[in-house]
Image 1 (tube, rainbow, N blue to C red):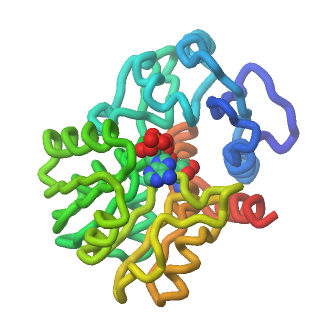
Image 2 (cartoon, helix red, strand yellow; image 1 turned 180 degrees about the horizontal axis):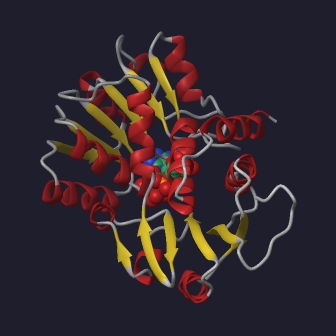
Length: 289
Ligand code: NAP
């Protein structure tokens, strides 16, 4: 955002579109970054019911530079852009749209954001057994990214939604070489998968604000040496992460993925390196209040 607060013909507009978006942290994080670098950009939050019309509007307005796409539009948005990165076409959802003079390019920064969180935490996934809890949009992005970047031991996926589970399993088997094993989530399947898992990645909304007093994994199932990554980031420390930490396990917070995906979006929108520490500070300040 320009420090003089003057927006005009040259100002590049970005927005998060979704429904609801009132509590999105994205305007705060991106505007702080624009401000830090004195860029002539501004970022707003737009509640959108019809994603097709929203993207048509973006295409018509060349100063509408970038969109972050959130629930429930990540899949539908794919139908209304002009080009999609090959990897994201396979994953089946996008969280970013960049407007190149009326040509809309869609991509996802969720998978790379999660991958960077794991790499930064020095977790080596090669030949490790991964347990993925959830088979929704974020789980799809993360599982494809892991399968393409590591030679995994076993990729075990559990979910209560049979249709999503079967679809993700079939797509991973067709599109990657990951040794996928999926089962409906039950007490027994969870217990068995936890015995084999080196790293657990939690991708369901369980434990998310306001239902913070919930965790999918009973603490007695944790084993020494396991790594637990919870992609839920409200609260900053979920019950799952608190209990895993208390058991002496290495934990990774979903806020790392959130910051990373926003940094990657910022760099696509502006073409310059993101002020990562500023973005991190803004997110943490907002989540701690
Ligand atoms: P999604 O597409 O709705 O997928 C969630 C999956 O979890 C669905 O398959 C859902 O099944 C399943 N599920 C829901 N309740 C469950 C339960 N009680 N037990 C077991 N499985 C359950 O959502 P998503 O977009 O993947 O997001 C999942 C979570 O990740 C959300 O909390 C979101 O805020 C978070 N997230 C974080 C980041 C980040 O940057 N850190 C990025 C993306 C998402 P049904 O379809 O049957 O409900």
